[in-house]
Length: 113
Image (tube, rainbow, N blue to C red):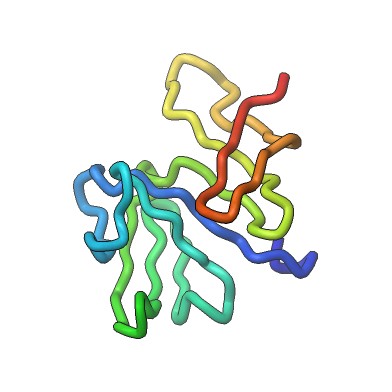
């Protein structure tokens, strides 16, 4: 996404054990995090987690999310992205979303088959 000039955002289930995000920014048990180079400092993407330092309302915070808490990723500018499934019984654990309705308040992804 960043290579194409888009801003990557991840949707995180904040109720998963081990998630460390500012609780005041969690809405409906989820938080949307901007992981662009300009917003996520010292970004580390490893097999079991994503971590970085970011500012929330001007206050720095060290974010740490296990990969199993990440529900999806999308580009802010287009709303296009992927939602991740935890279904272990299927080989297709990622679903592609070409048609995503974008709103100013928060993104909404829907599965297109």
